[in-house]
Image: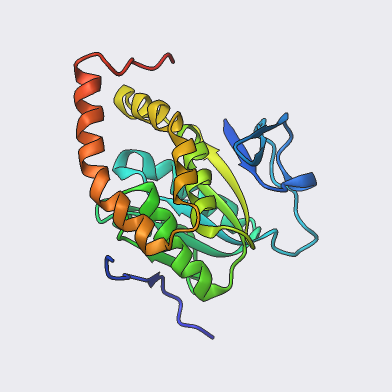
Length: 236
């Protein structure tokens, strides 16, 4: 039997909402619609159905969101993992929030042999890049992404870019309370998701390298635009 501890991967740097591909009868009850290549299912808070003792997913992937937003995400990931709907629990986060998420996992899960944690992420692109490296290692193809509701659309799109064909990607969005700037930034970035088409066919390393260069300047511009009133405040 494997030793009961989390796998700190540590690769070197180089109210709910449910969405995904092919959720079928196992999704939470809700209205379905089609957005950006995904069949999105708006959940009404119902519980996931048990699949006759068989895991519905190979892995639950929880995305870090800073200390403020990661708590709700990891609690939802733990809740779903303890229901037995996936074999593996994977966390991809940053240096600031990974320890907090690891702490919650250790408190709630007794057998940690199928828990994997990576703390190299500083963006959604990093989340997908480092998660894929773990998923390939585990041969995990049916994926449930857990993130904030406001972040789910972009997270699914970025994971789709990296995982490409051969993966079933679904997602759960957690209701939380992001600040106005975070929401405004996300609304703006959602409008630019069509630009991901230009990265089709590129290697994972090249995509990551490009985003590593531009994410700093883009964040600075968006922050300045928000503070000057160019970037409109979100309506809550």
